[in-house]
Image (cartoon, rainbow, N blue to C red):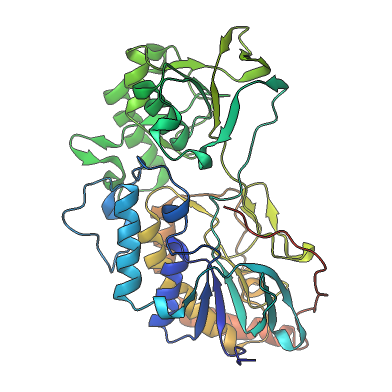
Amino acid sequence: MVDTTHKHLIIGAGFVGLGMAEALKAADIPYDQVDASDDIGGNWYHGVYESAHIISSRKTTQFTHFPMPDNYPDFPSAQNMWDYLNAFANHFDLRRHIELNYAVSYVRPVENNFWEVTFANGEQRIYKGVLMCNGHHWCKRFPKFKGEFNAEIIHSKDYKHPDQLRGKQVLVVGGGNSACDIAAEAARVGAKSVLSMRESVWFIPKSFAGFPAADLLKWWMPQWLQQILAYAIIRLTFGTHDNYGLPKPNHRVFDKHPTLNNEVPYYIKHGRIIPKPAVLRLDGWEVEFIDGTRKAFDLIVCATGYSVAYPFLPPELQRVEGAVVKCYGDSCIEDYKGIYYIGWVQIRGGVGSFISAYGPVFTRFLKLQDEINVPIGLVLKEMGQQMRETHLVDPQETFRQFKLANLLFNWIVKKAHQVNTQYPNFSNSPLPPCISYTPLKF
């Protein structure tokens, strides 16, 4: 068996996994990387529809230290994004550390604070630690409908090409970015497009006055100022929800994941998208809505999101509550060292700039973990850090926190050693091997 006890394992080679791999490589931290798919890119390889474009801008989505090509548009396509991630992996020579078609079936703590990783092919390895970057756009969440439907029901994850909608009477369930993209596509190529939303959303234009909306929010802006700016942009672009026959949202902008879309309001005005409230029940070929109306459909697309899931972890390490992983520093837990939940937060803006700032801070903490016996999560807890209550992250606030962490890192190291002396006998509690498991499915 090859000795991997001096290495960390990165699970996943999507946007976050590749970004973290580059950060570890830059910090001279030995690692292996695996992905269950047959190529790198994560959701941009196996998960998005052909016509998808990013909703955040090129500038906020790109890795800060590896800009996208100048000939890319402000909102790159799915193919642009996959090409970019391949170029990133090639530029930083990441491929030689990546093993593809290598699904992880089980991860557990064993003696001496090591981690045993079992792969779907039966191979087992022992690692110093595990970085879980397996993404949050693969475990499909379906609504629980009453009744039966005679035609097809799919998840937005299963939508790949406009031909799936062509000539059909389509119901899209959801109010997020994928729901609006697919409803707009159905408005173009389908016989009918109906968008069912349980509650109204704030439609934020992707661009304003010729600039991507995401680029107008600066690092120094507190969230209340960002909200005022967003309300002004929405009002100047779309007017009010009454103009579209929609109720006003019952939440403030940015309190929920924003929907950046210009097309849905446009197609509502043209009669190509019919907005409807929540589904009451399915009845053969028809769907009844809570307003009492009924319509017939050929296809229902459930753009109802995904669950955060780590199916390869034992119950003792399942720390997901709703859409939130209960951890410190967005990755560390207080009772086990060497296990890191990375990439579960949803950034309001581009993930590349976030990972570019987060990676170097994380690797400093990873090296600090080598100096102390207690988990970094316990150190952060003892320092008074609170767990997140939501999976939604204001990137501007987070960038300020990263800057502060770098400035105060010598003090953090001192505090970590103080906490370490308070728990001289800490050790991970080994857990038994798993008898059965559920492999990742995309």
